[in-house]
Length: 87
Image (cartoon, rainbow, N blue to C red; front, side, top):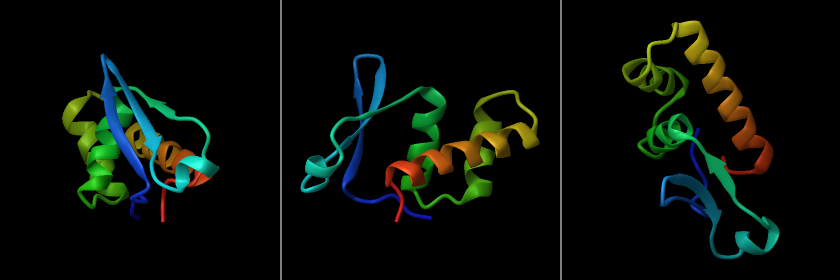
């Protein structure tokens, strides 16, 4: 699972946003807002993380059950696929 290079994560004040760049900005009209957890998952994906590594990142940062972390990762990945951020 790999993020498309046409999307970048930026922090604007205290908000994390994913923005399209290049030709993708024509087709993807808007931006995706992420919370701290979403930004953590995005950064982990950028480093080549898979589903398990994403869940591990959440577990290292938050006090949640592994099943909850995996469910959150699955939801995050599904959203990224839906909007076309993953290759």
